[in-house]
Length: 86
Ligand SMILES: [Zn+2]
Image (cartoon, rainbow, N blue to C red; front, side, top):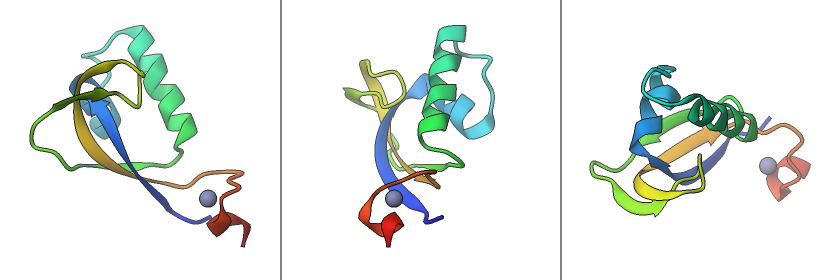
C-alpha cells in the first residue's frame, strides 16, 4: 500500500484523542466521530503544523470551529487514485 498525505483542519479538542488516544476530554458522540475519521484515513500518523488555531471547518466533525492545521499520513484500503492503481 502506498502512503498518502493530506492536510486537514482539526478542532483542538480532538487532538489528544487523535495523537495520544486520550478520549477523556471529549463526548461519546465526538469519540464516535474520531473512530469514523480513523476508518476513513486508516493507520494514520498525524503532525500538527500550526502553533495557533484558525477558524475553519473541522475534518473530523464537519463543524466550523477553532482548528489546527495538521498533516496526516495514512494507508488507504481499496483506494482508486492514480498512484494506487498503477
Ligand atoms: Zn491512492
